[in-house]
Length: 212
Ligand code: AMP
Image (cartoon, rainbow, N blue to C red):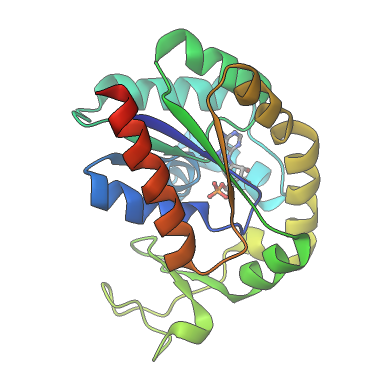
């Protein structure tokens, strides 16, 4: 099963992708995480990515498509994978379709006020990248690394505004693309993580039955 998770920043697709990937034995591939790893490693791609990410802009298609396809070529995802944060433009979606078979695109959405509130509480471990929700933490330390969690620079209010504009202008058109190819499944993301996960799991069970 190869899945795409779509949705605006803050809708919770990253945390959901981690959870669903674990439950279904799928490989979780997040292009945002890949870019943050490049930034930490101080690579050429990382230096370029830092500027785009911190300005709230999308990376150029050519670069991100090459990075993702190379990851897919080298992956040993026997059960399939979840693409989280890719595609983010129509061109990326069309390029992806030339190389792999996507079974479903799960689109999560929630009102903008909900997204902004969630982002303001989002924290990340600067070492391992594990994500947290500030008010659900008993201390402000990463449970895996013991270091203090931080707010992503691109989660700061002014950058989030730019990211939402990028989302509406460049990413939203993908929803119609997947609708036209019969792959779109819409899920209300304005619910608890448990509630959203239960809905997505139900959908995946139906998909599994349909594919067998
Ligand atoms: P994320 O962790 O998915 O929110 O991604 C963080 C940032 O990485 C985005 O705001 C973009 O600047 C960049 N990025 C991640 N995935 C892509 C993509 N598929 N296309 C272009 N830029 C991306």
